[in-house]
Amino acid sequence: MTFDVAIIGAGVSGLSAAYELKGRGYNVVVLERQVRSGGNAQSERFDGFLMEHGPSSVNAQAMETVGLARDLGLNTLRAELGNAVKSRYLVGAGCLKGISTHPLGFLMSGYLSPRARLRLLAEMLVPGRKSGPEETISEFWTRRFGREFNDKVIEPLVAGLYAGKADNLSVDAVFPAIVEMERQYGSISHAVLKKRIASGKMPGRRLFSWRDGIGTLPAALASDVGDAVKTGVTVISIKRSAHAYNIKTARSGNLSARAVIIATQPHVAAALLEDMDATGAEAISEIAAPSVAVAFFGFRREQVAHPLDGLGYLAPACEKRPLSGALFPSSMFKNRAPEGHVALSGYVGGARAPEMARMSVEDITALALEEFRDLLGVKGKPVVFRVRQWQQGLPQLTTGHTGRLKRIEDAEDRHPGLFITGNYFAGPAVATCVKQSLEMCKRTDGYLRGLYSMEEPENSNFAKTAFP
Ligand SMILES: Cc1cc2nc3c(=O)[nH]c(=O)nc-3n(C[C@H](O)[C@H](O)[C@H](O)COP(=O)(O)OP(=O)(O)OC[C@H]3O[C@@H](n4cnc5c(N)ncnc54)[C@H](O)[C@@H]3O)c2cc1C
Image (tube, rainbow, N blue to C red; front, side):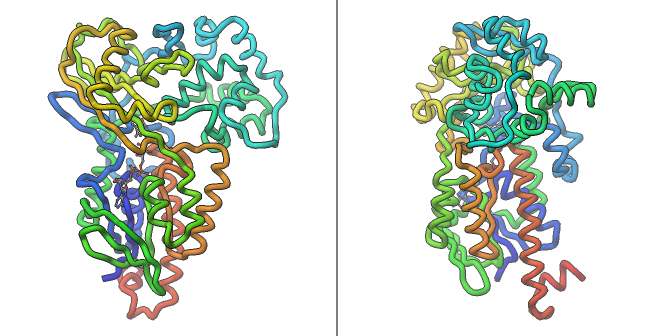
């Protein structure tokens, strides 16, 4: 049997594509190496706690724009950020400093030196750059807002959100909207003020999850796609023949499809593409995804001295802490810990120190516990703890990323019917992965329509069933 589309990888990217293409009437199969679908998006409930092994919140505005969660009927299951989330915390001089997200509150907080605060205010006077060589995140933010703001605010933010280093990542790839603000308004402060005046509120990120965690999204997608998702199937090669792609699996035989979508982590995509298109494979293999680990703990409330009245905390590299940061899941959302208990998630590794995420589970547990004792006043043994290690963590959109994307796009063009998606194109956020895949599906749809319109109707199942 020849499928219309074979999708390799059942993470959020692959499943969104499967949902969309099935909805357009195509005969789809999704091949997933693991026994569970969802990829990074795994939520696990145990002993009344909910641990997020990967993503723990989603950008509301971005998710609402793609509309997928609404179409799946997931809006009634949403969990909104709790009232307990009042502050943002950053590590400064070895302890946690509560920082207001309001610019004025931030300026008054004393987290930055008086000199750095003056430099922040002077941003409006820094001439805007309309063009020029690509900058790293550090170069951009230092040029506009000063070194201290970059090192003590932007650098930890980048480590927390992208498990990356601000000195390596491309500002164009990671913060395209901010770069555009400079191009359009000449100053970021000016652009933000204009937006504030126009909308009546500060532009910002609103986060949400679902009652049973982020795993709700891939679970709903997989349930909609149904039997077409085949778990425990590892794809080992893709070969192109005259009319189809032949897909070989490790132990589950071979299959063919008119179009193939690679929706895996970048290192797997590069390996699968190697024989077919060495240039495209090389471009993808340049995208590193350094290891990260999540150390999850549950405590009785009285064991933690800190009020946990925030999302969590971020640790600037200059503080030399073993964790890049932590989240307070039971403050963020309801049902993350049993009554009278709290949950903490610490993040280890990423581009700053990938080797730390590969230490033994015992060492990661001990390290995170020690850190929580020091920064959050945790006492005694945790009620529960668990560590999740990701050998391949978040993809790093380093400088040169635009050029790499162009080389990947060229590879797709050389092989009609080959499509590539994932978290290494526009960014790793779940909503961005969904958007990227849905955009790609338009091209897949266009390709299949073209193919079927050239065939005799009696040879085409699709022409009979999908477009009566
Ligand atoms: C620790 C962590 C925290 C994060 N936090 C957030 C957050 O708070 N908010 C947010 O928006 N995003 C967050 N992210 C990012 C986000 O979770 C990921 O970018 C996104 O889930 C990736 O989805 P994907 O489908 O592109 O890739 P993946 O989830 O990696 O899925 C790829 C799939 O391909 C499968 N596969 C690989 N090789 C093969 C093969 N040969 N054959 C068949 N199948 C194969 C894999 O098993 C996997 O299931 C986080 C990620 C991590 C790791």
